[in-house]
Length: 272
Image 1: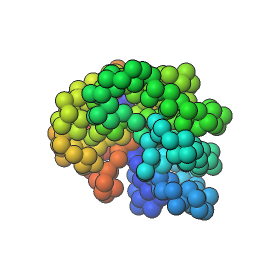
Image 2: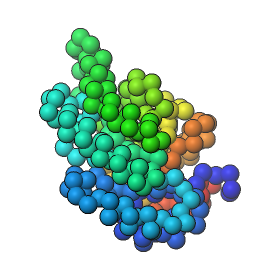
Image 3: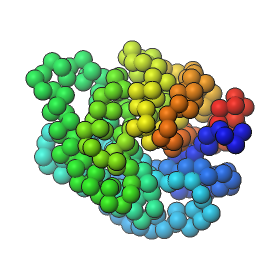
Image 4: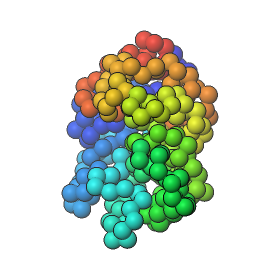
């Protein structure tokens, strides 16, 4: 049992308060999700972080945040929009620094449309990466300075290698890959993408973070693990073969399903 990976969770500050005993029982990695809000980032986010830090006394896992994403993409072509995106990413990293966070999730810009159309344009793929580099450049430098990793999470990604190539293009230890198992399963079931374990294999040691959620291959369900149709033994087998020790973060719509999810993976002998 002790050699099995320890599962963490994505929670709000209030959710961590509810599940604090579970999160402190083992060195479970934590992702706080309050800071996706532009209203909070433009307001008194310091008070929210200070509240979290008090609750985190005794917490031994790694910690980080889900970065802002509402209303924008990393490859925005409009320079004025890019300026807002740059601001939001830097605000998120300010939170990470104060929190002692070592990761911030950002959303992949690759869409299902891109899969069919990027190669329809001269330098379509190159231009997309250039726009992301322009947008993320200041945040990458800031992340390097504070010892934080920007982890790029698949959203609509049909080809798991697109996101990998984007992360590698920065040539920085501060840019890594994230996998959301439910998003990958949606893409597999609804758009013909590979199964979830293939996403893990494609990422390899660039994989620094995983959102664990179950789904049905049709929609982004965020069900408790075991409630959908993801083949969890194949996912954990693939994870066992990479050396990067990614944060394994249960991300559910209903936080009350976190203990159940851990128990189900433990019963299968996959995690603790």
